[in-house]
Length: 118
Image (cartoon, rainbow, N blue to C red; front, side, top):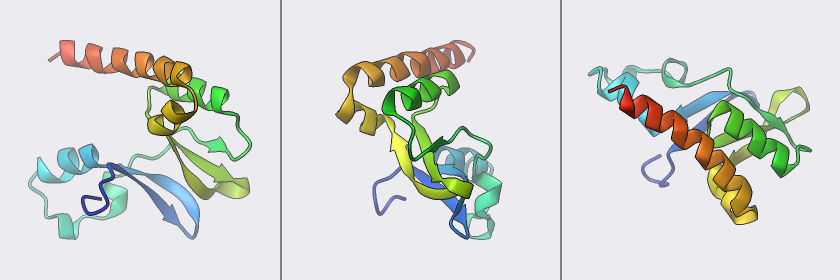
């Protein structure tokens, strides 16, 4: 992830989407816990059960899903759960600043409320 400058990586098994690993999940579940990263498996740090969209989903609907689930990325899958790609907030910015702003407004509220609880 460091070598490619990415903060999010999909986890797939036999082409099917299984979850997401983020740089923050590695930090919180491996580094902060002083676990040996060479002994950890993807399943121990990935997030699963997150919302997904199908290839035919329009961008406005995808943005609504991102906003309602307060996430900056959505896995895109084809029939049967085959992983096709990852739709990100950066992708929304390129297509529609209004949709990206809507997602950001919802996710900023989540961040602000979790920071105020600290």
